[in-house]
Amino acid sequence: MNTILYTQNKSATQKNTIVVNGEVFHNFDDEIANCAFHYIMKKSEKEERWNWLIKILINKGIIKSTKFKYIKDADGILIRSNFNEKDELGRYMPFLFFTKEKKLSSVNKSLKAYSKLLNRTHDEEEILGLDKAIKITLYGGISIGIILLSIIIWKI
Amino acid sequence: MILFIPIIPMIMLITAAVVMSGTITIIVYRHLKGKSIAILGMKGAGKTQMLANMRNMPYSEYTATLNPEKYDSFTIHLGNRDVRIAPGKDIAGGEEWIKPYYKEMIEKNDIVFFLFSATKYLNESTYNYDVRARLDFINEHIKEKEPVIFATFADKLKDGEEAFHKIMASISGKGYEALFKDNFVLLDTRDKKELMKHLNKIFS
Image (cartoon, rainbow over all chains, first blue to last red; front, side):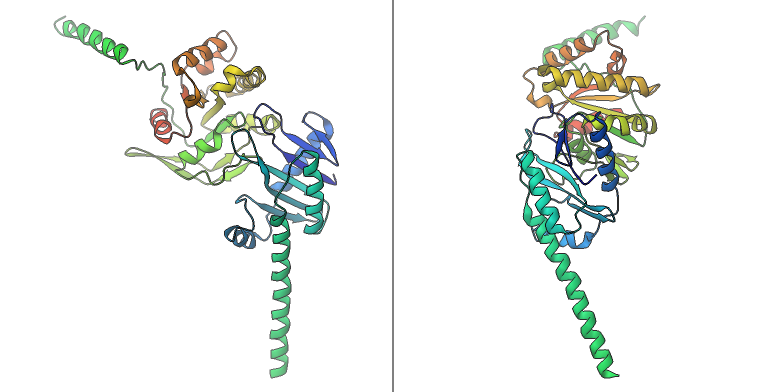
């Protein structure tokens, strides 16, 4: 499973959709769709990463969905958020997206392409903003560490 | 005999008052006790909204539920009584969730709620068919338990009483008819007061 997009549709009478490696499925009895559905569900139950940072980004309005999830493991990255489009009840349509990409910028590109298959759009700022915030936190932490280490060495 | 005489006019008076006021209550409650709940139902039927109202919390984000969302133990305040509800999962309404979750949730929880949109059930044949399929599934696995069935979006109905009878007529003679015997209610899940009124009776 390289890339999976799982989402709902506009009407409650429409079945949900799962896109597996570019192929769109509405029937979850199909072996590929069923397998992908269980795979992405298992992935979505894994421990979320950078929770505290995501909360800050939600408070700052960079991430719009309060249910935003970022899960990363050895297999790839999973994002849970909302599309910009709404369903018949006026609710933002949520999605789960899994890809084997390792970089958030690549995840964003891939999600954009998959969303296009369903005529949807996602808020790119959410993923790119998270990417930026993680980098700042990591590089900032490393820089502070190096400075502190340098001070300690200099004092000795 | 002396005691019996005033009872008859009293019954007649109450009946007349109820009929004249036009508030005939059709709902028959079977009082249920329990600590864990399963909220099952169709997509967009109001499951998450109902859970939010039960928890006395705002609907955190107006979005559909896609993957199961865990909730902690909470207390429903019903007048001067508190009912403690065990932690659980808010599961999505997509049919792909039936196989992995329904059986377990029906069997493990004390009270099973099933929600469907009354308007869609009465007006859309595909939706109607899907509701019936789920009722069949519930009926097959619920055994001694009795579910609480909420036909939601009651506020969107022109005539609630007519809708109630239409729904009852549509399930008549079906294998799952018994599920509707008690605790079948037309409800607007956004109406917290109304929901609490029903929960008060269900959890009494």
